Image 1 (spheres, rainbow over the protein chains, first blue to last red):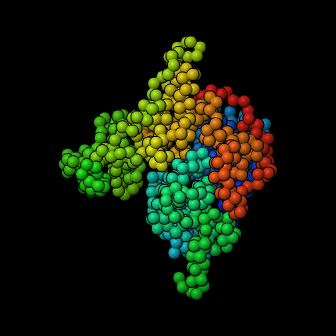
Image 2: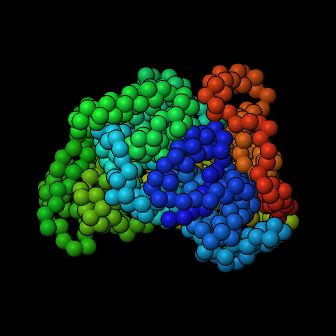
Image 3: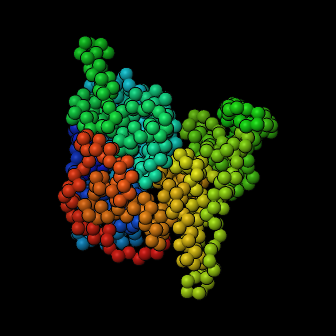
Length: 301
Length: 317
């Protein structure tokens, strides 16, 4: 199973622990990757607000690079997945648009013919690695933890661009939470918005969204949250304290990237997953994992 | 087949809080949720209150929350809902005042629609003095809106701040920005109102409105077009506009977004705002989460720059 890894900006910028934890687990799951080191930002839906065709060209440039390697793309960011998945659908279904965008790529000697698929790590683990292989790799079950999935927007909606989970009833994150032996926490906010796209300019609205989702998860009994999107992670982790003040709640809810949760269950040391880089303390999660490890050594289930 | 229908009931004049009641009904092939509601009202409980008219997804009256998502009851198949969710849970639209049971007060919805001046401004000729008729495609389907309110109920920004004009009213506003019969001056005046707080820059692009719209209006795409039109009309000082332009500049310069510089692009020289952001920046720095602002650009950045700085045709759409 080989993919062209599209890192995106966040994993190379403000959430380096996402890149680190991804690289720490994929080999064990039998996923080989070649990193697209010359790939640009996907535009995150923001570039497209000013320049829709330019933003499509950024995605097409990345697709052409992967096509040159003969590989499909693996994303590790929910936002990149949504933006690039949507771009890919448009380019594949509109030959005139594809031709126009290819003219923008031509000076670099690139051409995209529409043969690449774009898949998020979450989907690759659920559908291609499969639960059996994943369970073989699990060393420590996270049985004491109640984990709240937080999907974010772009990995679910619009479903005709994404096409993996049912946007009204997604199950992929819950499947992985159960696979690591933990209990999945049900709450309405799991499919809502983290507020990140407007957090700098409309902080109060964004933090209300963010805080409401975190509080709902906490009230439903969550010990931690896990997300497949680093932009959600920035909002939920970096801004958590402010979000708590906005909704009048003491949150202190550790938020993990998806590969960090998988890595802990696979027995990868927390520092190799970049757990020390979080703003909200992840100590309670690490303690729970350590306790399980000790129990396992002592021969208890 | 006999199925349970869980209906959220609430009479604000008599009750303190909403409660759920379950009605059991024999359903037949091809029945919609609205068919079931009409039969429940006729056969089981005449007090159940809901709004409907055309029964064919034209009037937009019967939008409600079905199994957690905003839908028109008249075009929602009971069989499909049952297969997808294993239950039929019917509640009123969210974040709108409840009149009774499934009927919500749409007064606020209509006042927001009126607030965007839903008629053509200026004289009804083009800037060249010639009358121009719009082509339907110019509206990108926003004229298909049936004002059902599903998008507003699903909107995550409206949930956080109910002052937000919301997807339906903004999509309606876009219909006039796209109309060639409205003068440029009238469009500029319109955009000057829309760029204010509670307007176009409050949308977080969560895609809920796009997902739930029964008529494929894609309100969020209309909001994005309004943002583009505002920027092109010179409204570039809001945090939202600075975000878009600053983001594009950074990607053209480095190939990727640099999160160390991005906040400065959005906030600009607003000193109190900068002072609010700084402590968080320092905490991020200590955790190794602030990217090097002098990080070298990606390989081939000149091509990214060429793409993003090419001359474009311009125009509001």
